[in-house]
Length: 114
Image 1 (cartoon, helix red, strand yellow):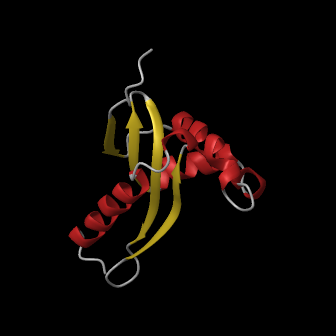
Image 2: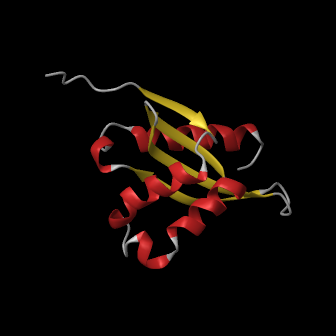
């Protein structure tokens, strides 16, 4: 039996609406209250796909981690709102969310936003 851990890759804005929806569905129960009880996951995935900047962790072709943020350029020096931080249950406790948040913070700092 192969017990190796698949390689995790980190990318920006790769996920399409379908992959985002699958990820949100898998992580929904871990939000309090569950995400699916607060929003329509299909609509939310579409909104994230169209409007957010996403920092994503992938294991092969599966989206396993997500940080999604909205940048408001109408505010002086811009402002940022983090809408979602999630990692699928099978990939937790591996530092994925921390690495995604570091990438997010580096991106924000690179834009001159504090």
